[in-house]
Image 1 (spheres, rainbow, N blue to C red):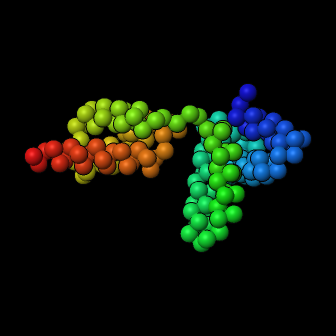
Image 2: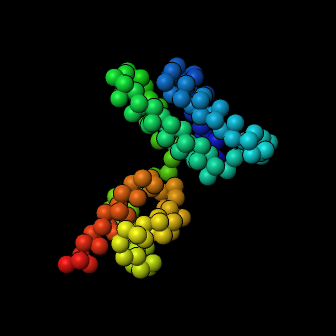
Length: 158
């Protein structure tokens, strides 16, 4: 069963079971998916799972940003609502790699490219994100790449 059908089925179940938070969240993401289908001219065919995952990632990012803004503004109840929505949506994404797994992949990429220092950040990130797309959060990958390149640079000075 494709991801869009899973979301539709879960929406119907949430509606029947009166799970208001889940129903509202899935309703919004279903709308986002339909809008993307219209934008791409794929209304009849529908989106691929990869395209649905992109829609989900964008929705999660928007909610995380809103959550932070609500926290900064002292609106904890709204921040909590956004957090619940993120948790619902995260269930539909593929399992994310652990920091340890990401680091192992990045060490290999850095050796492969021959990167030596932070000036090679862009080159490493380009290769890394092509390989890790959908498996790891880009900001987490960037953070680990920076650490590894900085450590490598510091060791080169000693």
